[in-house]
Image 1 (cartoon, helix red, strand yellow):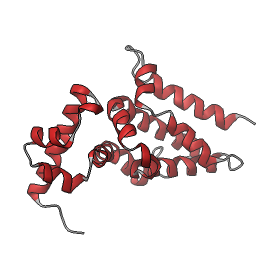
Image 2: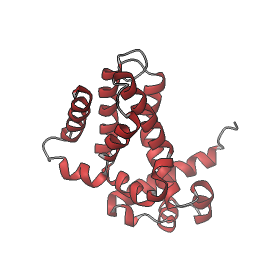
Image 3: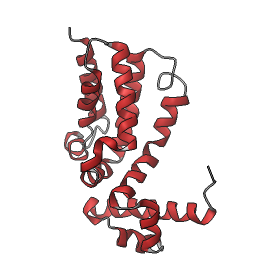
Amino acid sequence: MRAERADAARNRRAVLRATERLLAEGGGDHVSLDRVAALAEVGKGTVFRRFGSRAGLLRALLEERSGDLREAVTNGPPPLGPGAPARERLLAFLDGLGLIAERNAVLLSAHGQACADDKYGDPSYRFWHRHLSALLTAERPDLDAGFLAHGLLALFDGGLIRHLTPPGDPRHFTRSVQRMAMALLDRD
């Protein structure tokens, strides 16, 4: 695989920062390829060639936001990385995913809208689902882990996160998801 050229890397960073800014200013409806290109001071063709569409742009931003979590799950130390019992890894993973979700609820909403037709094919979603399914299977092989993983991931909806997060308790959502997962595993 060829290394990314310096100017291409600079443009990618500028485009993703512009997307973040537009999301913060006006939500997902405020993000268009034209606006992103203008704010990033690159041509619209540059944005289109690199990301393909608004959905591709939001997908790339979500991938950037979740890259550290993916790396920690794959190669990091326990409990998030390999080597810890499945239940501990599940709680750690939901904590990491919850932190991303709590910090990026607007992005998750916009991403969900833009990628609705291919949500389950999204690289971040596929990784999260595969990991959750494996952990759930390791803990309770008698359950339909794939279904439960989809159910848990359905909770990571930007609107729901904003609705369920009280101003003084930014981790309330994540703790609630973790308790729900444990309740599912502990049922006979």
